Length: 203
Image (tube, rainbow, N blue to C red; front, side, top):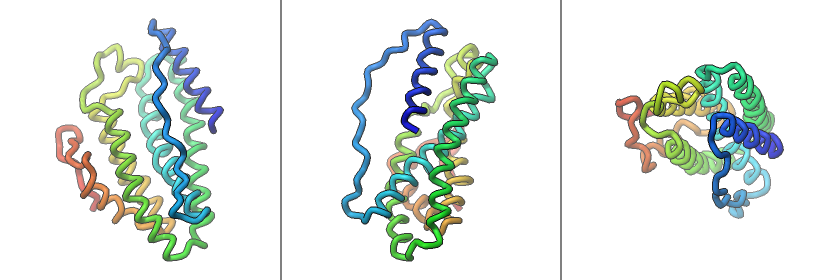
């Protein structure tokens, strides 16, 4: 998976160069992978797998697919399709692992994972909304190569959480719906607007 992410970065840099930009940015400091010292090894692994695969990568699949569909140049569509295929694999890894382990999870572990989901969903929304500005695509030319409309991307993000992620986690016996409600109640992002409308609460 790491090698695939590096390849994605390399391909995207090539696109920037073809479009006349300079594919050089300052690398941000990367946080260490959480070790979850308050959890046993199984819970720690599940926390990270859920956060990365079931949450972040599942959102990435939805957003990249939307970009692929709107990208005009066939070469760019093919590149996004290639990246999308990898991201689907990353998401499926987590969902399949969770599905496999779900029947053996104790009620206590399910409850603890539910508590963690409040944190993970809040962090997911905070991160994604910070990268999805609440504005339209900057120009028709940008939109033609797949630069998303921020309002549409935000709607897609919330739809993915509420219609894909939460039901998927619930199906594995995790209290994802109550966790999502709790995240909405406490998250600093909860006042975000979706397409000019107040953020819908999960029902």
